[in-house]
Length: 224
Image (cartoon, rainbow, N blue to C red):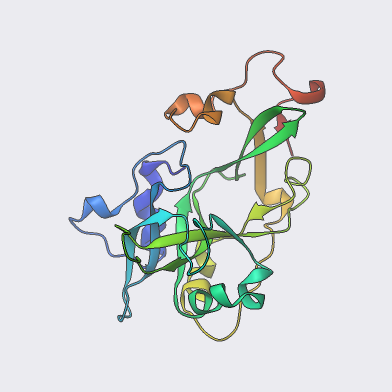
């Protein structure tokens, strides 16, 4: 999810040129599901410049069916299918927040995670070129162990890359930058409406407060 008002400033920090190509910048999207077209910052193939490209969320790998949405940081080096992408095809997905679901029996309760200062950020990812039958290049988001804020909700969380670390991630090299969870005090978590549970739903209702009493175990709507 990215709020478009801050998108241009965030991408400028990543070295993506501005100008008249407004279509290159993300639009507001409150409910992005796997297989969706998402915007990602990457080095232009064969060039030094960076671009904001449209990628399909769901990394295609030879011999893997159908695709990979999230890649565990621990698997980037240990699994051959991810090594080339890690070395040569890293990307960053701009966002102003992300959802994770807490399970309670058969129910799923969505939580919205954001930075405490309200600023947008990047999620670390890798991408692969489009294969036969693919319209776009494909990508996956990298996950790591949860921080203390995420742990009550889920056992994994995406790797958040602050703007000042953009170069360290995108400038591919033989080493792997630390892929650690962001510190608890830099984030907030808020329970939101189950409206977001349906991938067809979109708009501000996805981040609205939950209905009265709609909380697992009677908990309050915020984690700190």
